[in-house]
Amino acid sequence: MLPSSKLGGNTAVDTYSSTSITDGDVVTVVYDADGGVLTFFVNGTSLGQAYSGLSGPNVAAIAVNAAGAQWECVDC
Image (cartoon, rainbow, N blue to C red; front, top):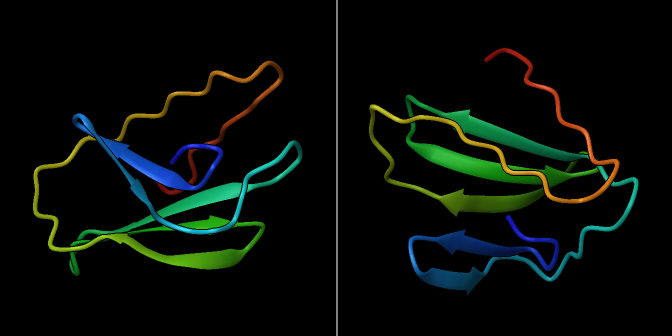
């Protein structure tokens, strides 16, 4: 997810949410492998399903390009 809450995949960028991400926000990503759904949360508030109909195998990848940004993998 981009700071503008747009989703980028392959060569396309789609509008996902009107919520913008700013310094200090906490972004959580939840992947429901059984349901095939990927959902983003910002500061604990769901932005709704980003992707559905996903099937494995899948590999998680995180790219952080902001100075001072941090990430943590929980229940990976």
